[in-house]
Length: 184
Image (cartoon, rainbow, N blue to C red; front, side):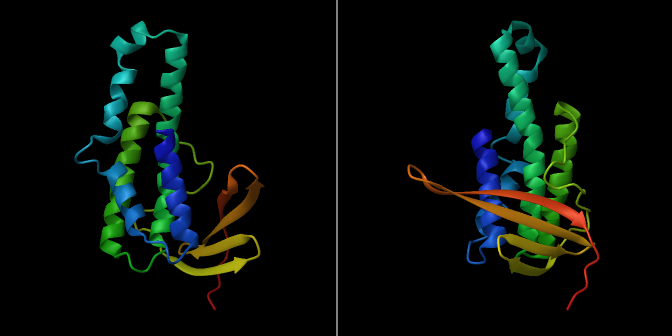
């Protein structure tokens, strides 16, 4: 689950900030989580939260189950960010994007019913069913600023870390803020 969350975030960032990066991979990854027709998605993990399992768990296993639950909840936040990145690409049809958004809301409700309330650390406002579309992007030094319909501004700040062992590593910090957007 940790690896999947990292892959989702990395793919979304690549799609959002690298216009040549194919969006098909992100589409497939989102679809695979919110509409898991074949593999079952997070329902495969429900066994770890059953009464039978919780009765036999030792303290370490209980901690692992709690960590898994937190990762499942965190994935909803990541998926929300993925949908913003997905909406930024003009080659995506509104109908397909809306299908993903609808699946997201169903998935989010399922997660909240089974695992608890989701938290919005990275992206504060909830996306609406009408789907945001990115209208204008402007790169300013180390901040990628993307104006979104509905008066929100997404700021993605990159921190480049150079390591002699790993090479380059890119972390991001993102947040949304409501703002007055004047289109030029």
